Length: 267
Image 1 (cartoon, rainbow, N blue to C red):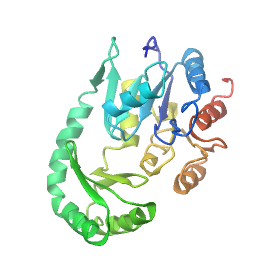
Image 2: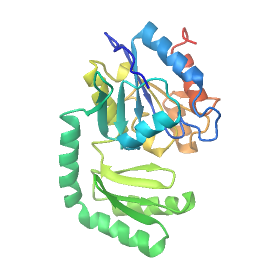
Image 3: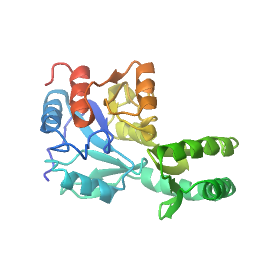
C-alpha cells in the first residue's frame, strides 16, 4: 500500500467511518474503486486530506486497509474513537502528541473517579442480561450485548445510572459499547485533526452510519455531514435534522454519492 504525496496546502478534511460506512463485508469489492478515484480527484483539485475515523484500534485499521485492498494510505486515522495517528515519511503510524498522551492520562484518572458508577452498571448488566463485560488495556470498561434489543435495554439503564456523572460518555456501535470521557470522541478528535492541518469545522466533511458517529456528525465538528443509506434510523434522523445529506446508496457507494453532492464539480 503506497503513501500519496502530501498535500502542500490542505483545504478540506474528509472523515470516514470504516465499518458499515466505507466497508461492506457483503460487497464485491467491499469498497468501491470509485471511492479511491474521487479521493484522488479531490486531493488534486481541492487540496483534500482524508482519514478513517473509527472504533477500531490502529492495528485493526491497518488490517482492514490491507484486507480490503486499499491502494493508498489515509492521511490520518482516528482509532478507538479518540486516538489520532499520522503516517511518517515511510508510512509508519506515529501517535499524534500531545493529544494521545493527554487522552490516555486523563482517561486513566477519570475511570478511577467513576469506578463506583461503572461497577453499578456492570452489576445490573450481569444480573439482568447475557451481555459480556469487557476490560482490556486502554479500554477498562465496555460490554458486548447479545442482541440489539438487549443493548436497547442496557442503554436505558446506562442513561439512568450515569445521570449524576456529567462527563461519563460512551460509544455504541450495534451491540458493542465502550465507556469513556465525553471530551474524547470522534467529533473532538476530528476537531484536533482539523487544527493540526490549520483548518476548522467549516472545512470538514464527515460521513457515518452508527451511534458512535453522532459527535462526528455535528456542525461543531463538520460543516458537511452525511450518512449512507444503510445508516441506523437514529443517525438518518440526526443527519436530516442538521440539514445534512442522506444517501440513496449504501456503504462506499454512498460515500461517493455524498462527496459528489458536496463537491459537485467532482466525479
